[in-house]
Amino acid sequence: MASANAPPGRRRSSGWKRSLAIAASLAIAVGLLVGVLPAIADIGEVWRAIRTLTWLESSSLLALAAWNIATYQLVIMSALPGLTIGRAFVVGQISTAVSNTLPAGSAVGVGITYAMFSSFGFDAGSIAIASVVTGLWNTFVKLGLPIVALVILSFRGQGNAALQSAAITGLAILVAAVGALGLTLARESFARAIGERIGKLVSTVARRFRRGPFEGWGERLAVFRSQSIDLLRRRWHWVTLASVVSHLSLFSMLLLALRHMGVSAESVTGPEALAAFAVVRLLTALPITPGGLGVVEVGYTTALVLAGGDEELVVAAVLIYRALSYLLQVPLGVIAWAIWRSRSDWRTASP
Image 1: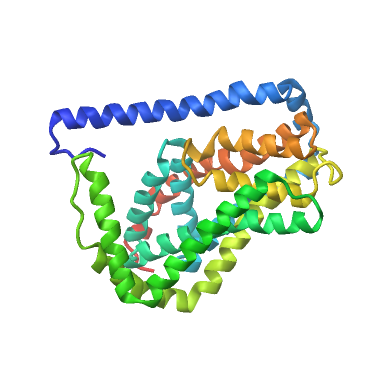
Image 2 (image 1 turned 45 degrees about the vertical axis):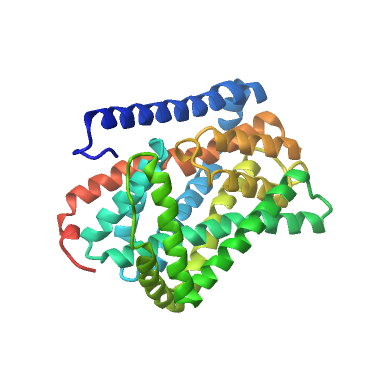
């Protein structure tokens, strides 16, 4: 966000660039949804397939969607002791709704998360550690999923080049990230050196936008290291379990939608669906569109059709999955905001 004290020329330039980025992001999403999906499947047939859902099938999908939302809250609760499920739901749904609707909404969501957790009485250090740790563990699971899927498919003789590339990329990044994290936690001198290097890198980039310099990152990372060690020593297993369960719940919703739409295990096996899920989850690490809109739908559809699924049935399943995992988050975010506005006691009471 441009500073209020910034020169008018810089504010106009920043606003113009932001508007261009938003327009490009939305254009990509619309182009993929309107231009690509109808070229893959007949949308009329897709809608007819969706209407064949029985009340029992719909109820099972809604129940799994509710559980999936609950697992989001378990992740942050595992890293922020003292946080209740109600407050976690409110913060999580508001930030998710923002992330799903605004280009670069994830950054705005982080700010909202920080402000709301602060109002609950949590200190800045605890919030920062919880956010970074859950973000890292979420990334680790995303990087590890293609490896798991490749191992399973290899045992079944079903490996493919795209999955192999994703698995190799994920493994390389995962090893480097885990190694860097391990050294940072093990050695304070390494943490300080990494912090200073990051500060210089950020300052170099920021200079192009007439920002910075940013100093003292070495000391900040050293303090962060000591606080993180305490949290991870006590709760690493809960953070890991919650992160894995959250991702598997999301995958289970996709698999159930496929089966309810008639995409059988003979046409797309469970491991093949997991491979598609793993590759697309890795792709969404890049914030191309809000909530991966368009990218996720086309990615899942392409991967699952190539695996052997019927085009119309696959698109129907993917749209149902996205309605429950993406669109549902927006009205829930509005409800969460209404709860937040009505519970003034939450904004004064310490956990």
